[in-house]
Image (tube, rainbow, N blue to C red; front, side, top):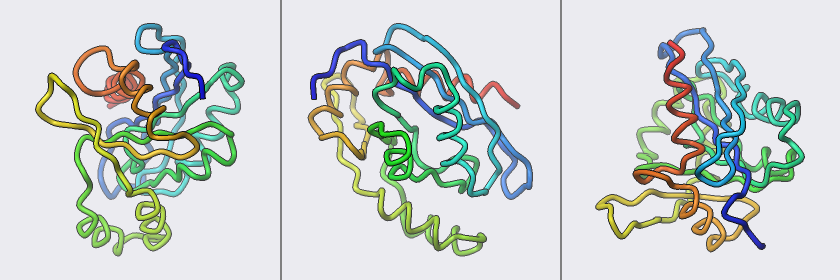
Length: 187
């Protein structure tokens, strides 16, 4: 796959929420060309601890003017709004876009499984998490701590290239770093 440094990426993260509530929170999609050009911001509401995040992201992307030009979906983890679990495989299949998931530390799967046992559809959510828990390390020359990634529809070398050229500052790729900042502003 030939990847330009100005690749169009949508970075996705969730806003703040009240745990174990029936409320909703925002999910934010930020469209970037590489690491320098912010082109757009999309938003949708999702249920706290619900099961609607995957389909809401599909709807968000399909209904946007950027849909045809996006090359990659980048997630800041697959759990949003508590345990509203995003299924990267469904995103890939329904949108025909590679999906890269970035996390800052490896998940404590035992604790996650225990927490999910108390939720409706916890077994389905657990299955998605397990299927997407094969994280690879991405190390930096100038940072002590690595980040971790998993992906669907794209090989690891291409993922490493995209990560490298989408980081402007720190160790988090710009599309998800800015999605996190914007999502955090909704209180």
